[in-house]
Image (cartoon, rainbow, N blue to C red; front, side, top):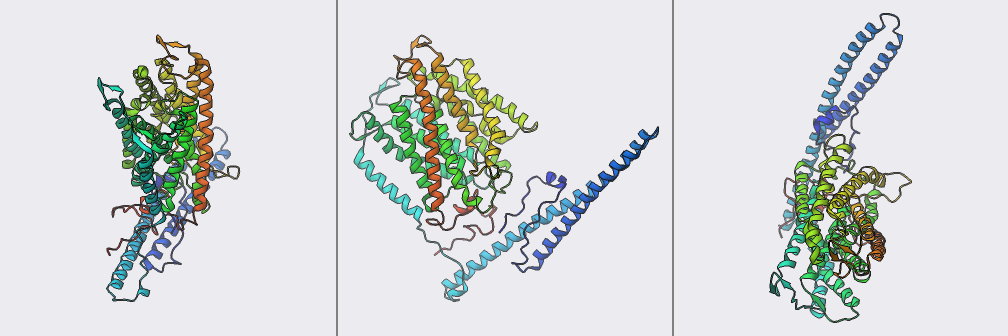
Amino acid sequence: MEAVFRSQKDEIFSDLPEPPPPPTRLTEKIQDTYLTGIENYIAAIGTQIKNIQDSEIALMQNFTQKLQKFKGKTKKDSEEQERLQFQTQLNTLRRKRKEYREMERDALNERIKYLDSMMQQKQEQEYLRYKLFKLRAIPEAQTSYETKSIWDISGFFSIAFQVAFIVLMGLTVEYREDTQNNNGYTNRIDDWYSFYTHIAIMIFFGWGFLGSWLKKYGFGSLAFSFYISCIAMEWAFLVNGFFRNAEMANYPKIQLNMFTMVEATLCATSLVVSLGAVLGKLGILGGEILVYSLWGTAVWCVNYFINIMVLKAADHGGAMTVHLFGAVYGAGATIFLSMHWDKKDADLRGEKHPDLSSTYTSDLMSMMGTLFLWVMFPSWNAALAPDTAQHRVAINTFLGLTSSCIVGFILSRVFRRKAFDIRDIQSVTLVGGIAMGSGHNLIVTPAVSLLIGGVAASTAMVFDVFVVPFLEKRIPANRLKVYDTRHVISFHAVPGFIGGVASIIAVVMNSKYQFGIDTEAMGFYARNVPRQGGYQMACLTISFFIALASGLAVGLGIHLSRGWVTQNIPGPFTDENHFLVPSDFPRAPGSVQAEVQPTT
């Protein structure tokens, strides 16, 4: 069934000059007198609105012709008299048009309600026939209700992965005796656990709630972020541990401690960031989320091994290896994941798809995620920073966040026609913390931190306003359309890139000694300062291309499996395809979970 009309801004709808395109008439398929009357009524009102619009155009043309005929001394008085008459007639037409549009809006909403009630009645009848069949009151041929098996391929894959993970953990992992001095006592976890809790809050509350702006995908945003994070952290323990042993050219059992837990949360964060690009388009059916998470975690660990363990790049806050990597990985995947609906001529752009929008409540929930992230970001950047620089890391991150917040508010009002867009505020206020993720410890001054935050916010907003619409544009020249649900390219990839460039410039321009500390001797960099800039550039380049190639690969693989592994792909951006939703959820007719589950 077609996506029916839904208007959240009735006053704007009433003032629009043109009627909306009439919905596909269903009376040929559904023989219903009341529905036929509603559709005929909508068509008649649309014709009246079109006639009023034609009259308005003719009135304007007539007014223009009369103005050209006025000459002589009475020209000014005649023009003023004609203008007043024209304005009176035009206001009358527009008032009449607005009345018709209000009538049309009510009729369209009535049509939606009636179709929903018909669908609900049909579901109840089918369920009743199913119960009668269970009681042997009617033959099976008279019921079309289909029971669903509790098993599917995604459940099998998930259980197989968990069993395999338990076996591998038992064979290859052991605890490490950690004797680091924390708060004056040995074998305590205070410092690392504090960082872990802050990062976990960012993952599960911050990024999860930030993606819940979709009006019908709140469950999916929070629950799938939770699910993907747990998969990523489990898998990262093994893969990252293997590479850490490979770095030492020694293969004992993988050592598990609080430091490895924090490293695993970095991987989970990168996967959750990438989820923003494919939000609402990646399903649980066919093991899509599991494959996406396992592949993304493995590739992230490879990238982390190359850049952090081998090249010794300084990226303690993950501007390049977490945010840039995650955003580009998700952007590469969404190119192919969107093709299923693009082939059906379903426009996945925000202003076109009816479910790719927000409500006042969903935007408030998303803003809660922003506030969680904004408060916890200094802990995120300081977690893996050198001990003697952590206080400067926290201060520099805070300064970058404040600068991006102020600049973001200003630019949102400038670019959105003198009104703040809450969607901008939800994301652009965080880019300062992301951009400070690489060069945040000892290589920048407070003024530079403010500058980096402001530049990151400005670049992200310009990219989001002018570049993203082109990436989504449906033109022949743009064959690989990038439908980025949460605009992670603008608000993660761009500031991550800026953070990488800032770290290159800062390392090259600064001397060996900063704030009276020998940065090389204290372990801030693995080599002398000028050479370190080249390795920063290598990390930026390698992270981008590995993320892009792996994202395209997993997106193509899932796209090709659709129709083979997964037969029926549910529609995007709605929870009803994956969750048992409450009765007040605005269901789409013909959805996967359209019927009440039977109790057997």
